[in-house]
Image: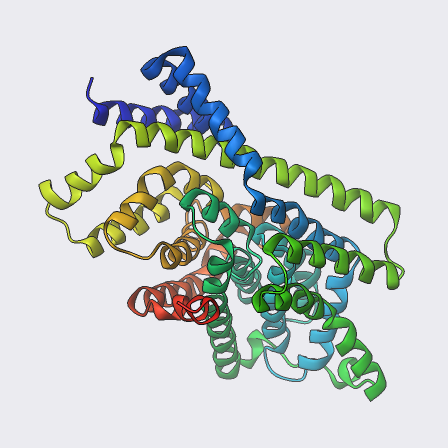
Length: 441
């Protein structure tokens, strides 16, 4: 059997296991180890799995994952995110669509606290969505706002998914985070512009709050402002030393976790329940990421041994005669297809052994491609009919919001995201300028 057929059989076996409901890391790791055993015998099979396990354990930046996840859970479980939304409620309620715009701001700061899109959606659906509906906002508008805002979670640093990408692509995490800053803020600004224009043309979509709800004494307004900006202060306390070169990435993540913990203690919100819940959730997510990374590295090692990447590159460029940009666009379209049944991490670990080396061989920048990947996968699983995020939103929404409402709500925001993706593809410096400036490239 040719190596190309072996690679195709591995990929097909993995997809069958995934469709049968197996866990992502289990399906990928099982196929990788079985293929290694059949190809290189018992010694080769065990050596590949063991070597990748040692590589995961020795990868120092992986320590950032539990730190950032713990920081996000501390701030959400202790109610600091509630203060943040209360600030937007008071300061932006006086303009049409102000609370929806404030929700996008909330999502940006939540992303800077946690780095996971699911966490952003959970907070948006439980804090912002009921408030927006209660104040007469259009249900389709606000449902789309929460879903679109949550998409920023894997793009704005500290993105946990970009840590996973960095491990698989062997790229610096710090540069990937910085590459996501401007595209993430640009996308947030585009969401805000869309909301503002829609509500300006049709004020009934986002009515202004009554004066009695927002006319508070100035002292109370400034107190809410300080309380709401606390997450931003924690973010800067963590990121400034890292960008300045005073601390390493892991040290900065520890600063963020400790600062969030101290802030919760000083505000009198650090109860045993908050600490216990945050710790258990952090442990669960960290272990999940470690298993996924281990499985992806083992799968990639087998693919490298087979020479599958060179074979696919030859197929696209020599036999089919496709240009590098055509190949890249086909990759992006495949992400959208996979997004109908997989989340972002699963999509990455399934195709990373093929796509990432191929992208490098085609002459594209892997830092830039990391940003393209994050935007494309978010578009993928917010796209009807089977987008991953759509069903999460349905599970968290009140009964009056139907699945049809959720489908229709996300269409304009997906169009905005596709526009943002196009801009980053056409103008790579949108993503690359900041890391090149900071790192002096």
